[in-house]
Length: 608
Image (cartoon, rainbow, N blue to C red):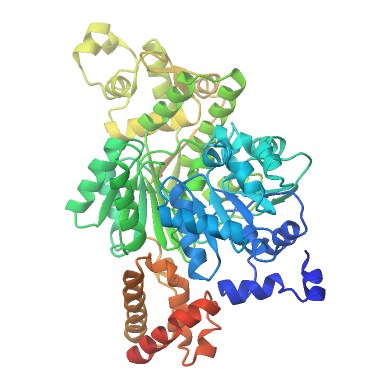
């Protein structure tokens, strides 16, 4: 049903429901076109950045149809979270998963049988269980909405083979319409999704990947714990995520942060389910908690007020990086990101690609993806421009990343590069960073003496720089592809064709040095609110947060499910005095106005 048809038949229009149910005055850019295509019954593949409102694009049509929508969701935490949020705004929704209580299962099936249920969330593995699809077929579902659709593709970064059964399961269910959504999919992945999920060509909506509220920052590892603490200075009371490459590191780093006075939890797939649930609940429900986690954490987290994301280790690919930083600032307010990376990270990523059981084509693609991530780490110009360019999107320099803020200093590094490359060549192209640094700095070790490398012309040519500086240069050469792994088994470096060109003086080489500095004052300021008196503004906002926290604890739900930060900030700015005025605030729909309007008006009156 199109919007015009809705007007003729007397059915509510999508824009009316957007306000009355969800409290939004209008669609975000690109949403309305997707919603119209879904309502019209067309097959849809929508690639929309995290925080752009993908969920509305399948939730809103479900409220306008006679039949309900099955939502394929990859994680139990994600589906349970969405069900709770929908119930908060008065939408009948349920999930079928292994953590359901008997009461929840009975409630779900009662909603299915009565046809009052609007959205059913389910994992692809459960939908494929014998007999379940056939049992659901009698309920007259209108469509399947596939969330995190990149999981269907072997080229995607979270490949889930169970997603490939969805087209045949749709046939069993008697469903002809499939709509799919993802935040990250390059052209190869989009083609793979379309061929595996749809019978014909879907309507493809490719929206901007830009997240202008995210401030991008990278730094080479140099006492990474100190770097992390420097970044976290001034961020107490804010929620954030720190991603680590190993389970052990999440536990060690969370213990370190707690010892430094931060509220931190560890999360990884090796923890008992009970401990994982406790950690996740604390992160969702409490304010100011830092989740130190592997990539097992995040896809199922729909927390809008995450103010920062840190990568304590280099991400595996640009797609993974984009997906993970996308968990910050989903409310549209400013958020910061920091990525720490080192030579060991790069060597590990390349080794992992070489050791995996991949076809030659897959290995080539993975090496290309790694190269793109390394280039982003070592960028010398606008990072956002480079990031968006990876997704075939042109943009102007952002003015907000560390490169644009002149935190990156560049210098002609050809002589230093030639010293390194000469040392690699003269020592037989088989040694690693520690040994090469000893050669360059003229450090006499037993290994150097035994190999007779103290007699080389390059021995001691780099005494003017410290070990950390030479390690940085070697890392930059490795990231640029001038150095490659000499041996899968023993490591070490060898020269590539690019490295030979630099060594022969046929190709220039720029060195970059990154300094981690405070963001300019204008970028650190919080969004201004209300009056000309900051103390009064802070008191009003604090009172609203306190009331939100009290209501959340009473109901046993995360605070943001009562109202998002953006809603509280607008309340503090506009100071509504009546329910009618409160209804005009962003995120205040009819049900939330009825449930919470008086409580927040009282909080405003008390604080003003």
